[in-house]
Image (cartoon, protein in one colour):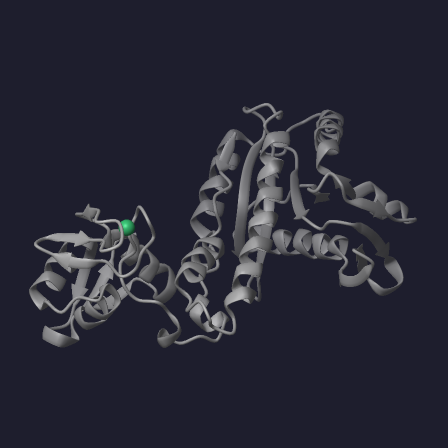
Length: 321
Ligand SMILES: [Zn+2]
């Protein structure tokens, strides 16, 4: 059963908003577009894992995608976590193309692509750390300890993996072998004659994982060291992507394709939220939507916010999720 499904990560949504609104000639424009393409490819790779996991019997396997938990000192991120009554299994998913060589001497992997070499930290070391962090987390939350398995899954079918190390060969797999590795897990489960967890324990673990899961919510503007001035303001035309639309007689009017829209500002405010967070004042809204009328701003704010605080010009609205 999928407890938490794989969804488009907030970072990708933020990058999509940013790449559509960064000034076209900005020095970081192509850099941001490249990052977005890279994260999208990684997401596609991780998403492909869902298919292989769908072969697991629903009633025995509980699957969480993208879980981020705090072990008391650090946050740790798990691409996928599989829970059964007898074990935990962590999947660390890698979407690296080309040839990947494991170098145990230096705890690194070397990617050879287009004649160039690039080093990354060894993901098997990362997996070991995640296992120990998950154990610490279970203890901290008074949850039962379980045998812990884990795999590093390379999601790109064309990637060539090279390693002489037996340990590495056991835990590093390609996504199409995930099903057979999972049946190994099933065998392993059958060797353990009795369940460690009861159905009640499972429910409790699910409830606590979901409650304490804390998705990363960094400011994309800070991450790329940008300022509000680097961002294109205004409402996009939903049809021809012209910006900014003009507000005329209760509609958003596109001078380029002459389309009228009643609610084109909603997408703009979604962008605002992704770029600057959920808090907004009337002046910030007017500037971002490129409107002058304060009563229109108030009307829009009342329709899109869940709460407000403060008085008059200092009033801050919270945009609805
Ligand atoms: Zn248009």
